[in-house]
Length: 137
Length: 145
Image (tube, rainbow over all chains, first blue to last red; front, side, top):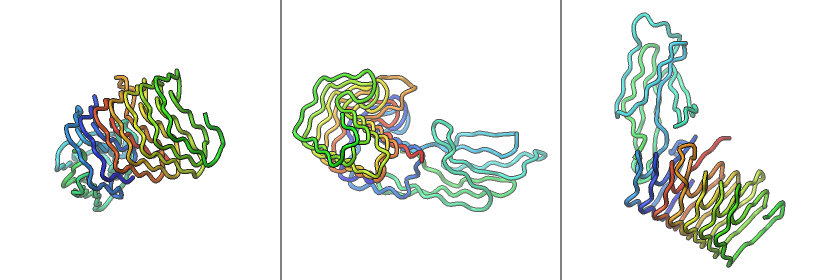
């Protein structure tokens, strides 16, 4: 999707994304150039909203948590039997967009103002650490 | 209504105060082929989905919208201006989307432009102002395939 030289002024969303909501799509490949955003309002994400991130372990003891912090760290409780850890990117309605397990992962989000933020995720057998996220603006 | 026709052109038309109890308050497009709409006005149209234009295409076709105004259209579910279900390429240029409304219902996804798999999409030099919706008021974009 290419958005360029558009004006988005005084739009309102009763939930999220006063201007733009992207479902099932990461923003990395999307160019946004010279758009004007002004006075847009929403309950969350006044201008645009992609999808929040939450976590799930793969065994029966599921754990879901919305990540609303710029950093996040989770340690598996001792004695809990978990064969492996998975990290899921999940959209607003709970659909899994992307999953991964093991090792170090980088995700790049290209934002509407062309700034770039990185979600750095370290998955090993016992811990999951997200060093930085920025998923809404 | 356009059905299985190719190389369509709609230009210099006004669609005012039309109502559908289902899809496409002003225009319903099912497998329309390549289509260009230019220099038209859509005002005060009502529908469940796609109050001005409902577009559904499963083939590799292109939809081009140039110099169109969408004003005061109301959808009870999705797409007060456009509801797009499939396309291979979609171009929107120099269009105005103003005062369009999605009726408040949390079951609705909302948006002035409801875009479900629109293919390669370009929106340029267009104005979105004073629209009201639920989730992604100006543009709700979904890729499900």
